[in-house]
Length: 123
Image (cartoon, rainbow, N blue to C red):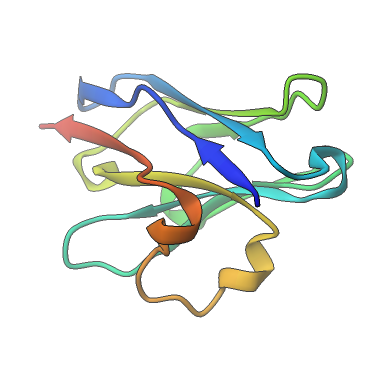
């Protein structure tokens, strides 16, 4: 069974930067597209970014050009580098594999993904 551990998170002021990282286990990491989702209170689960097996990335329009996602196949790690953060980026951030499976989830399935990590951006 795949597991995704996301330590860290934290609080930052608007305009600041923060990095969250995900370590995956229980899957053949190289074979999977990886993704970051987030969910803010009162909002639906949102796909933030994804990275293909060959390193191509895509990002939600809501994050503008401020986020960057990479992958380290040897370590099974996918960091998400966030800069120019805004208060509306405040959410619980989750990491998962094969994001196409979750395109219609209103609530991020933390029972499958783990508890995620809280990111808080203050104005």
